[in-house]
Length: 399
Image (cartoon, rainbow, N blue to C red; front, side):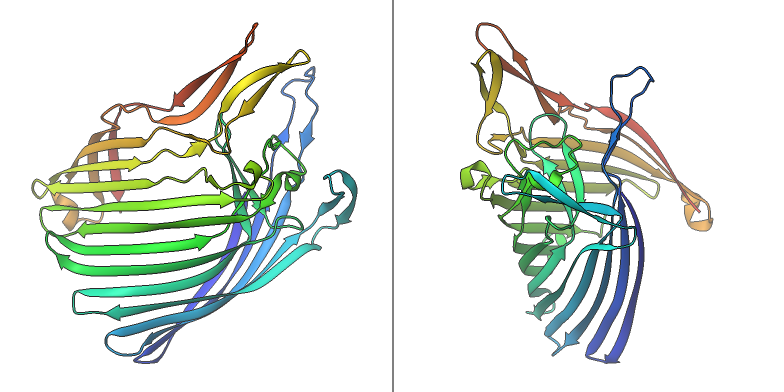
């Protein structure tokens, strides 16, 4: 995918209580979905490629930051976006069983499909006292480019698809409530936010994903619900600095035609997400730092068993995304050196020495299954990881 954008933002101070922000953006997206080419002339592979795709978005927005009183601040605005899928290209027509009937060809530069819509947003912040405040916000947004993720076993597969005749833009409604406080105990800043949003698109059961020129026949649209709470504690003064971030979340999907219409967890549904970063200054030149990351395992499809049918072997699966991957965690440590002369010269250098994943945790990247065929069929699953403990040296230049 290639992207060429042009964006302009403006600020207009109407008066001391109203700051108006407005602007526009023009985006052009170019997609090359993929191709297969033989490596040698005597290969039995037949050359094949999927047609390139192109789309454009023009968006306008205006927003007002309104200070109603010293304690109440209201932000409200509206965005209007116009989207178009642009030729050259073909639009295929199908019957009720997704068998191709015919197609319509669009020349280079012709609009194949267009969408547009208004996206309002509003947020209100109320200052409780000099140290704390609360926030309420709502926004509606439309997404004209979809990232479709394969949740079956094997290497993760992500496909970017622009909206077209069959793939509609996804509308997302998001509601946020937050609480913020400064100078609380050991920390300088605390924030707690909860959110709720809806949107989803997903593959059908047993979808054919390998260079499919009719990928729209493998997709279904339904309801998705995502909600959670985010907590952050931050300390940015003193010898010991850093932050702690924790998210508790849940994302479930329900799409007619997938998983017998029953709800199922999203592939990226990770209930717990914890990040910790600490840095301790040993002096003017040396410091120690550490980063810890923990997330619950995502979900995927794995075979439940296999069977013979008229001499051929077949595999059947658990419910959609019925297997949870192992938890992910990693600890990185480093000692950092900053040259004393950095403050007095334009050319600056910083060094870091450390180890990624010092606990040598084998975090799972993908799962593969090997089928053993005999009088009885069995499946063996294998987990693959990318790396264990990795030492590193970083040298950073500033000029």
